[in-house]
Length: 321
Image 1 (cartoon, rainbow, N blue to C red):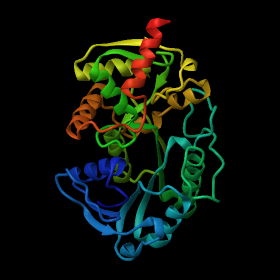
Image 2 (cartoon, one colour; image 1 turned 90 degrees about the vertical axis):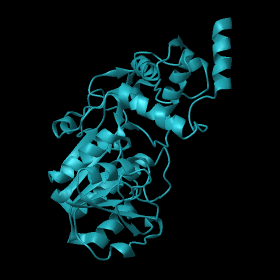
Image 3 (tube, rainbow, N blue to C red; image 1 turned 30 degrees about the horizontal axis):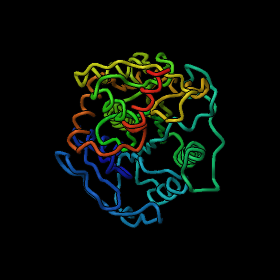
């Protein structure tokens, strides 16, 4: 197949490009000019910038499918559709579980209520990411109808993850010892290896499947405690979880959802994606690969989670209480 990937030099796009190339497809990458280092082969690169509407490099050419991983505001999807028109077969948009309205309840599937679409801003932030995603999906389906596919991933994990949410716990578990766990240890967690998402995306375009798919994981229910234990197994370390009521501290810990309503974001149904071929890499494998990648890059400061010093203060407080 000839597959066009819109954006694809970092985390999600990188995994999709890698999977498509390994599957023998001819991949064209539309990006600002960066290659994807570390791949066995490189896709054809067309340079452009969606931020300023520069789609000139896409004026010619046909593709069996386009995979859009870089459309964050509806203008991006609208302009891509106007440029490509009918020169592409299927248009798959990688959206986000942030499009769902809160409070749908455990086990909500793709039919759960969505947020109100946002059309009047291009500022992407915690309050606008979901509404902008809904608007992007509406732009897509209004143009491509049955040729549109939407994939809504949850929290993703794997090498090259710039979000650091899972990386924080992998790195912390590798240090071993007493670990602050500021939540109910039984809190549900949904984590999907980004490479599993990539396999689903490529499979959907290979099979020309339309519709909406929740891309979550792992296959079996996971808790915060189970996640921490899996990270420790991957590192070969010993951890002693120290339970701290979340309301007693101000430090923010990744993947902790003390609010029962937001906890439901980790209890979505993803059976449709599993039926479509979504694989499930064991969490220990994902953690080991993240640990190796993190060490190879030199373990730079993370953008999330408390520092080691803050955690030491918390542990001292608990010990003295």
